[in-house]
Length: 322
Image (cartoon, rainbow, N blue to C red; front, side, top):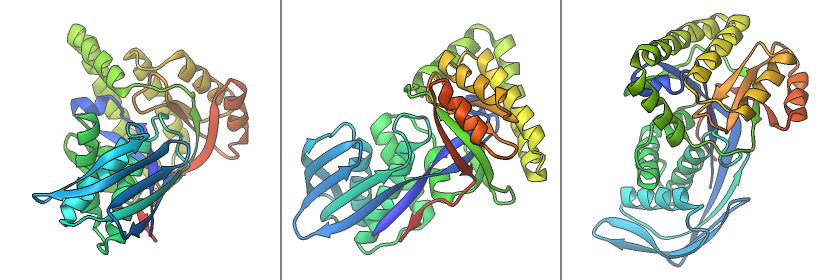
């Protein structure tokens, strides 16, 4: 069986969403594919291209299933291990399993690689066990697996990876905006890992020390998100771009951008992008740019200043099982 799930970006609203403002997230046309095959023993073998390999032994006790005696790249593949354990425990059954993982999503790029691999692993594992889980079950299991690995986590990544299309997030609510059309964008990866935990902490400190300045910034980002949703719906891409630029200016005010991101954003705007901004936590990771027509000029501009450009589409299909 083969399951695949997309990465994701925030078109608007990152950081402000932590403080109950709306955000707009969307899957990107870069996918992680997990091929699963059953084994007639109780061993688990994982081979993830560019990440590492892992072996272990499946054990079930008291309704809970775990992978023990692990060897290989255990830390790098922790999301995969937790995804398999969560799936076996949910099904109440486990067995030998071989997983081959291929991904278009750069690890550490801030493009939802962990959510994509967790979601696809759960779907591929359940399918090879003879169970096709619905999207809600996959999303819930993936959320639990991510929490087990990294502590506090957002449902956004796994929900977007599962459902596909654009999603409006506010507080605990997530609304799938099926009426929004896919968009062509260019992603620019800095090649530098950006710690979302660190930038979230930075905004929290800024808000505590300067609430009179920070709260209006967060509220304005929320208003930009609302206006951005309407502009995408109406196909007013010049307005979408202008709102992306405004969102970026406010994110810079929150001190979550970086010199590397700023360099890529400036290059994209200078080559004709309608708008450009960081996506995700910031501090590194990736930026996105909206092009009016042929994105090649933006691609070349990002490459010239040291970024890794990826021309892709957002608002695409979510989880698929073949």
